[in-house]
Image 1 (tube, helix red, strand yellow):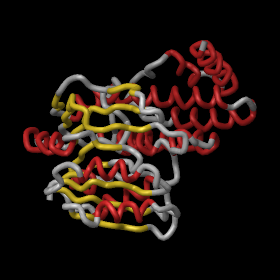
Image 2: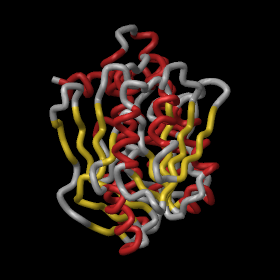
Image 3: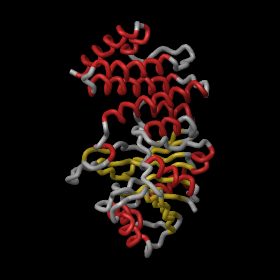
Image 4: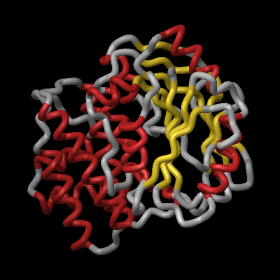
Length: 322
């Protein structure tokens, strides 16, 4: 079996039919669909059974006893996957017509560790917002992949990425549970392990923005704490693996800058923002960069005393925000 399509399911009864029809309407002869019921309380699974039980596709129905979140559902799918490649699809999104054939052809033609398709972002009203790629390219080294990642040419989202199953399982590239920004951490770990990556300039995925989704209902405290946890995990990876790659350090700096920006722009209480700032600062100072310099003038704050560094960085971010 060539492809395992992993779909977490939780409270998506209004959207899951659209998602599943977009998949079973294509050639699924060399695919399996892994549907992970994350203890949904609505009719999502009943709708799924109605569509899939009579479809010409192999299906695994997996179930969590309690709601554990998107990361845990994806991890359950990974551990049960039989395909040579994995493809993550969110249950409120859709695969574009011909997407499976596009991925299969790229697997056959490139044999890349990871394949990333083009995508569109669609609003609640159905209006088109954006797309990513207008070209095809194959990156054939980890360094070139990390360079593309640091330049923003590889999306951080897990969905719409087709990845070798053995690479994911062998390197234990799983999703950290209980946080937001889990896709950003997962992709960071992924690009450090893949040796080849194909970018396809063909529309393969439509991501639907809706008011009830995780991305639009982020709790502030969890969002900030999650960002710090993810940054800490990234730095730990760099330190534990003796990484010395300037492009990766640049990507770390960008991620850190946006976390600092969240701290200063979203928190009005000085005591609380100082606490979050000190956590980020201590993690950043502990990053073993092999003598490399920080990638932005804003990080001068690290050589200042903490109280002055806080004021300096806050002023820089306030200035940039204008």
